[in-house]
Each structure stands twice: as structure tokens, then as C-alpha cells.
Amino acid sequence: MNDFSRLISRAESLIERLEAVLPAAAAAPDWKALAFRWRRRSGRGQLEAVHHPHRIRLDDLVGIDEQKQRLEQNTRQFVQGRSANNVLLTGARGTGKSSLVKGALNKFAARGLRLIEVDRNDLVDLPEIVDLVAPRPERFVIFCDDLSFEASEPGYKALKSALDGSIAGTPDNLLIYATSNRRHLMPEFMEENLEVQRSGGEIHPGETTEEKVSLSERFGLWLSFYPFDQELYLAICEHWLQAFGLTARQAEAARQEALQWALMRGGRSGRIAWQFARDYAGRAARR
Image 1 (cartoon, rainbow, N blue to C red):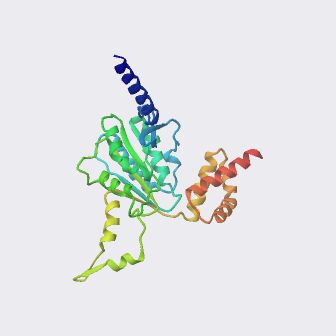
Image 2: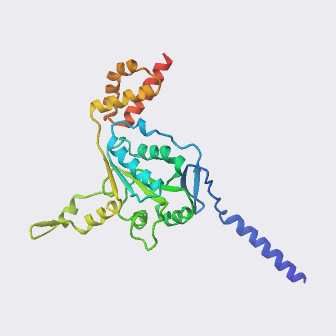
Image 3: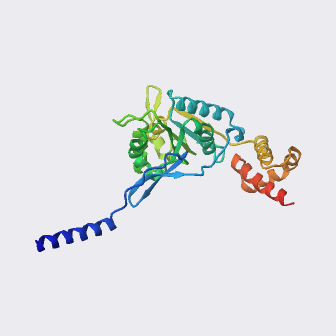
């Protein structure tokens, strides 16, 4: 009996040491949140609630009316339970790609839309995320911001399978919205042009190019964003200056400084206009 008691004691001691080493069980997601991040801790992934998401009104996004209308319509179909497409938003930096997705959350959150931000390195966990949200009544958009891949990255194939290609179907309450500065999401090299083949006067891309194109083609809706000209940049500056509390006359008087700001930054974009407006409005309030 004493030997049995010692055995039990040693087993309990061993279990305690193992429990100290093993990662704790993932906490249940806070489903009351409107937005989430997928985070890996101690080798395990979990949905981490974002209790104060970046709230952007779609009305504050100036100069991208067509892109805004198409994404808004696609998202409206989705939250209404109708068919909708995964979306790839590509183009110039700072032109509102990420803000448009955040604005869609702000507009449709009350109708059940939820946003899950997933980093490129964590896309290999997409099947786990899908299994987690599939039984839920909410409508989830997986948000992949500033997406690009190298050829050997595991997240590339995981995303391809999640979009279209896995034996497991994507649940009806899940879409993927991704932003990128690259249309094909992968770097393109000059030597790939040497793979092009000609047949009967037609040009056929090489296998490397076809592989790169195959990922972006799995997004049903493409939205392209272009650099802003001077007048549009100034219009966005004036919009944000008035949003920060300046009068229309004060915003008009800031045009020259707005152009100088863009010159110093080496470009014109919605992001640069917003940054200028924050700086100028702050200085104006101090005066």
C-alpha cells in the first residue's frame, strides 16, 4: 500500500511539472467584440478581442467613390446572407485601401459584421480560424493588410486553399478582404519573361507567372486604387481640416501649406492629407 501511495505521489508531482511547462488552454473568444486579431501565444493561436477598433466613416473617404460603392455593395450582400465575393484591394500607398475595410466594419457592425485581422505569417492557421467561426451567427471578414508573399512562404498556399481549392468548403459566414500594393501579391522578376511561349501567334505566360496570377484570380472582386492628383489631394486636406473643427475659410487658407507638406513627404495621398490636417489643426488650436 505504501508503495502504491508513493507511486501516486510521484505521478502527481510529474503531472504538476508537465502542467507548468505546457501552454495554458486558449481562452474562449469574447464574441461581444466587433473586431479581433489572431495571435499566437506559446505555440497556440487564439482570437484576441479588439475592444477599441479604429472607427472610420465611409463618408470621410474622399476620392474613391467607385471603390467605396463596390465594396459597400459586396459587404451589404454578405451581411444580408446573400452571395458575395472575396475582395482584393490593390494599388498606390495611402489611398484608402485599409481604411475602406475599416469603414465597412463601422457601417455594418450593427448588422452582425465582424472583422478578424490575420497577419501574413499566421495565414497557415486559416483552417483553424474557419472552424472556430463557422458555427457563429455573425458574419466574419478575415482582413489581411498589406499582403505580399515570397515564393516559399507557407501562408501563400494556405490562402490559396482557403479562397478556393480546399476539399473543405468555406462557410457562408466568412469572406476574405486583402490589401496589397501588388496586384499578384508576389514579386515579379525580369527573367520570368523568358518563360513566355508563343504558339500560333498567341503568347502564353510561363509556369512561374501563371502560379503568381493564380492566387489573385481567386479573389472574386478586384478594386484598384491610383495615386491622387493635386486637386484631389487638396480636397481631402480640406475635408479633414473641417473634420478637425476648422471652418471652410480656414481650410481654404491652408492650401499652400498642404502643398508644401506633400512636397516634403514626396507624394500626395489620403494618408499624407490626413497627417497634414492633424498637424495643421493642432497648431491652429494652439494659436
